[in-house]
Image 1: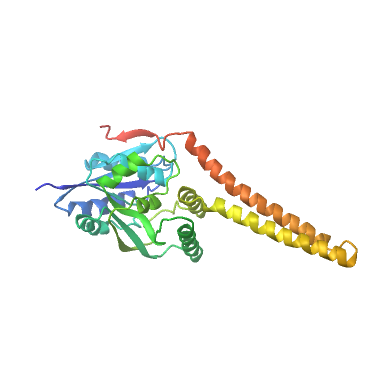
Image 2 (image 1 turned 135 degrees about the vertical axis):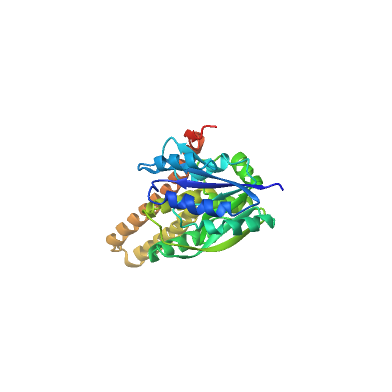
Length: 314
């Protein structure tokens, strides 16, 4: 019997309190899959705690586990990309976080859907105990805006916990070269047969979340820049709208002047109007500057990431 080759790709950043438990739970599930030849790839994003030393011990004891150590802090999305690029010999790749909020017990269900012919099996959170009301509302608003601005549709509860087939992984690695990647959007854009599985995101087992509100906003900006130019067109619309308002106001001023033969009062409102127009211009310039900055990052053609060490080194 030919076994299906599976790689688990998990980004790791300062998870010393939970990484052993993640490994133990994941290995237990993988060992129960008799028709699967599996391995775990830890992509370590330059930790500042004892995570790397713990992982070295784990890999020394478990030959099915390996480590990629990044040379600097390249972020979650680039860690996923590095893991995918180093797992192209697998039939399927599962991406999941190492904080145990992505339950390893869902791996058999992901594989079951893969065997049914789906190239991408993504997961949707139906509950998140730690996520506050503000974060939930911000997430809903972000995906609604992204859906309006771009041609891609992503469920607001979708997670980076997903399975992709070998052909999707190869297309991602060979066909996409932009630096600012939003993988959830790219997988939706790639197409192929896709399906979803629901799961409950449990409270963090230990440690603190590394995904701050600021990082969420940065990811939101990256996703909009990657999939839409509509904000630039929105700037044109705003400019035309305010130009029409200014023209109407000018006509009003002229009419009042000829009726009353005097300059109308209202310098305060005029100053406020000028400030408003200036603000709109700065907003439009800011949108343009953001896109130009993104272009600047792309044309430098720096590598997505740099690997410092592979463990074991082969």
